[in-house]
Length: 281
Length: 281
Image 1 (cartoon, each protein chain N blue to C red):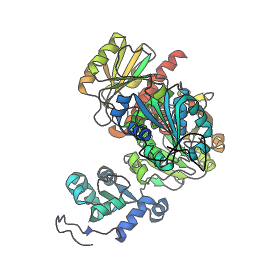
Image 2: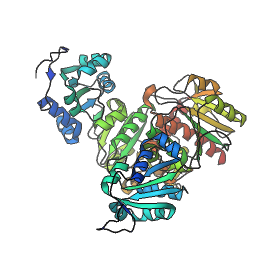
Image 3: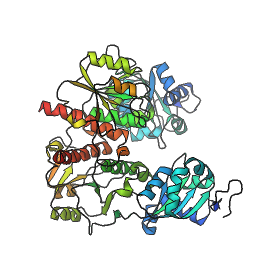
C-alpha cells in the first residue's frame, strides 16, 4: 500500500490485486459460503453503496478508483461518512473486485444486514408475505425483492434451497431492496407452514394450472396471506403444496409456459397489494 | 466446405469462420441494419428455432454442431423439415455465430416475420394494445412481449426509437413471442395517436406519478384501450403524453423508482387482461 502520487485523494492507495483486504473483499463477491462465515458481503456501484449507507448498514471498508472519485463524488460522500476504512484502488484492482464489465469503481464491504435472518425464530408477522422456494436465479430473486418493496410487501421468506440475496447479481437487481426488506431463510417447508398457520395466515400455493382457483378470487383485503412461489423450472415441491390451504393460479390467455418467474411473481404481488389497497380506500 | 469424416450426419460441414454463409449469418446476429436490409434475422437455440418453424416462419438456412445433433435431435427434426439449406458447423464456427457463452449449437437464418410491420398502414385493430416508446433494453422488450402473449395482448406498437425485437437478446427473452405477436413499428407519436383515436381507442399514458389516475380505475372491459409505456430511464416523451386521453399510474407503497420497466409493464398488461376477463366472465 502506498499513497498515489499523481492524484492524491488523501486515502491509502492499493496497487496490488494480492493485497489481503482486496482478496478477502473479492472472495465475498464470489462465495456465498464466505459471506455466511464472515457475516459480511460485497456491494458494488455508487448508487447501491450509497443505498447501503442510507439504509443504516454497517460498512467496514470502502474501495474506490480515482475515476469514481471524480464521477461519483456526491454518492461517495455519504458512503465515506458511514464506513470504517477507506482505500483508493487502481483500475486493475477494481476490475478484480467487479462482477460487471464496466465497473463504476465503487465497492463496500458491508456487515450482514439485520433484516436478513437465518431462521424463523422470533419473526415479526406482517399483514401479507411472500414465500420463495428453491429460487435459483439471483437476478430473478433481486427483481422480485425490488417489486415486493415497491408494492409494500415487506416480508419475504427464502424457503428450501434459494440462491443468496447478498450475491452481487441479486443485490444489483434488487436496487437495494435487500437492505430494507424483512428476509428470512428457512430450510423446512413444514416448519414454515406450521409457524405461519399458527400466526393465522392463509397459505396459497401458486401453480401454473388453469384448473386451480384464480388469484383474482382471493380476498387479500381480509386477513393475512402468504403466497408461495416455487423454482423457475419445477415450481413448488409437491410436499410444500400439500401444506398450503389452496392452490392459486394466474389465468392466462396464451401459452401456459409464457410467464417467466419474475413476471408471475409481479402479478401475484400486485394482486396482494391490490386487495390491501382496496380495503384501505 | 467438405463433409465431416468422423461423424457423417449427411449435411455439408462448414469448418471455417470465413465461410460466406457463416459470415452473413453472424452479421444478422450483430447488426439491426443488416437485418432490415436483408429482411432476415438469426435465431439461436434448439427451442427457439423449433418455435420459429412451428410459428410458420420461412427458414432459409439452418446450422448445427455434431453435439447439437445428438442432444437436440427431436427439436432439429421439425426445423430441418421447414428449412431451405442445412449445414453442420464445427464448434468454433458455432461460437462465432453465438451470442451466449454456452451455445447449444443450433442456429437458423429466418426471413422477416409477416407479423412485424414497418409502419401502421393497414393495421388490424385489436381489442386492446400496448405501445412501447423508445424502449432501449432488448431484454426488457423480449420479456414484455412474452408477458403480453401470456396475457392475451396480441398487438404491440414499437414507437419512436425502440430497440430491435429481432436482436438475439430480444428473441431469447421473448421465448418466441416475437414470432406470433402483431408488432408494428411507427416513428411518429402523433401519427400513431391519431390513427388509434380514429379507430375508437382510448389512449392512456403510463406515468410514475402518484397524483395521476390509478390504473385500477380504468375499465378495460369497456371499449378498446391503448396503454403507452415509455423509455426505461426517461419515461414517455411529454409530446406523447399530450396526445393521450389521460395519464395513469400504478399505485405504489414503497419507493417511486422501485418498479423496473418490465415489472411495470407486467402490472399494466395484467390490468388490461383482468378487465377483459372480468367482462368475459
